[in-house]
Every structure is written in structure tokens, then in C-alpha cells.
Length: 111
Image 1 (tube, rainbow, N blue to C red):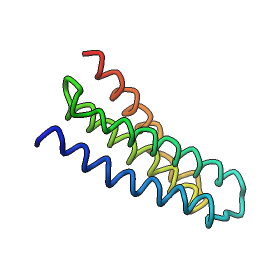
Image 2: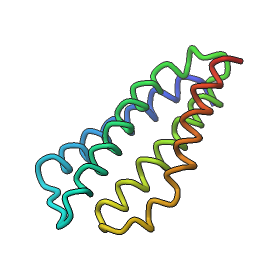
Image 3: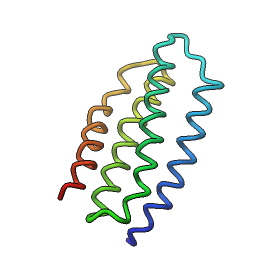
Image 4: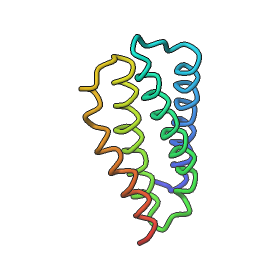
């Protein structure tokens, strides 16, 4: 896979991040307001790490960096979005793995 494929993945992720963030801000009205905050956190981490994906092609190991950030977005933000939408914390079980993937992705820039 060409390293610049990460730009396409970032584009798709960015579209999703903006759409989900807009939904969360304007439409999402959970019964428990705590889940509004969970959605906001998921959206913030999603958008931030999507922007970081744009740097994947210039990383020493672009596929490791991009893969870990993408896994982090899917596991952390995805599970937070799901838990917030369904208003059930049991769906946030993958969030710690996503957080670890984020940390590992950033740490991969050291090597």
C-alpha cells in the first residue's frame, strides 16, 4: 500500500468526524446529559487523530503510525459513540484498547 493512501483514509475519517460531531452538537439529545459529554469527547479525539493521519506518509513507518491511529479512532471513538448513542456504558469496553492504540501510534514516531 502506498503511504499516501493514508490521506484517503484521513479524508473518509474526517468526513465521518465532521458528520458525527455535527450530529452530536445539533441533533443528539440523550436522556442522560452525561452521554452528550461522552459524544463530545469521542468527536474531539476522532477529529484530532484524523488530522494527525495526514502526517502518516512522512512518518518513518507510515503503516504502523496510520494503522494504530485508525485502530484508536475505531476502538476509542467508535465505542464512545456507541455507548453514548445507546446510553449504555457496556458498549465502551473497547475504549481502553483504542486509547492504547493512540498512545502506541504516537510512540511509534520515536522509532
